[in-house]
Length: 123
Picture (cartoon, helix red, strand yellow):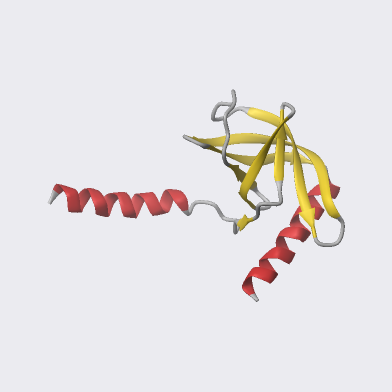
């Protein structure tokens, strides 16, 4: 009985924790993030943030960090832009971060590419 209840509680609350992100995530092996001159693979991303894996580094949850996001676009190829992010989660082999600030021009490019890729995925 405890195992069933624990499983139910874990599924119920675990799903709520995982689904708290409002933006759809896009999986892509083309995008990367540079932190302190080290380049990391982006597992998935959205207009709100990204997940890196693997990640080994010094960052801690809640920490603000300056990065360069390497966004691959259909029309312009790779665009690198600076952004400030907040580390929201560390996992054994990954890091999730939320965009805190970036130039409006780059934000527009990120939103446009996100929408383009989401349309492509839905088709």
